[in-house]
Image (cartoon, rainbow, N blue to C red; front, side, top):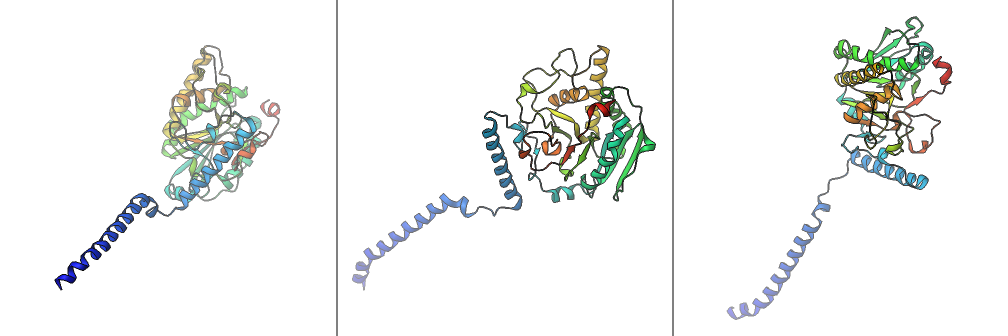
Length: 341
């Protein structure tokens, strides 16, 4: 028996050696591919993010093909200061709706002189597409309160009409909004709403605009300049103006037709813009694009916490419409000279 045991020892050692090599092979394989073995199953959100990145990459390639050297920063999903740029597919509206099920939202709009004609289509389109299912208060400022036609409104939607004197010049009308905003965000809205969205009345909602646009301070990229280089932005370039932005500063050119945020943030924004407008008037100057110039000055040095892509502010007469998959808030085509006189 002892002799048989000695004869079997080399054979047993041989099998043990094979077993050790096999185990080492398995361990090496596991170490190398452990990430693949335990990789979580993709969620719907991750798949959407991948799909969006593919879509934006396609937009960038298309842009490079069309222009050769266009600026692509507005096609990204994050700003350089890591604020989200909202494009279709970058949010899950069901999750956000649940998060904001008790949020109070305001929509601020001016409708004076001939612009009263745009108010009803604006409100009707808002009832169809703006913050559907949420509590909304419309803050309408007009010099023609008796001419306002109230649209059919859903539950939880309130229309407030406020009488305001219309300035003679349309430039003064646009700047007057900052004065009204300063007063109302401080004295009234803080007790009534959580977020305020400010919009031009000569627009219509054309697709979903929901709580994905809410944030501390939100601005919308101007659709004319979303592919432009910084040097082409129509900032106020005269140092004498309080809206002055030096060359090389700024990230995007924002349009004053749609912006918003928490009530206290809009108060700070409107206060700063109003102060700049008053100081300019004392010097007998006016910023090149009135309140929009002051708005851009403020946003250069007070970065928005969320940026809306041109999906949220578009004009069907503009080029590069193929890059805009959703056209959510559209300019109404009109004779500018006629409605401003």
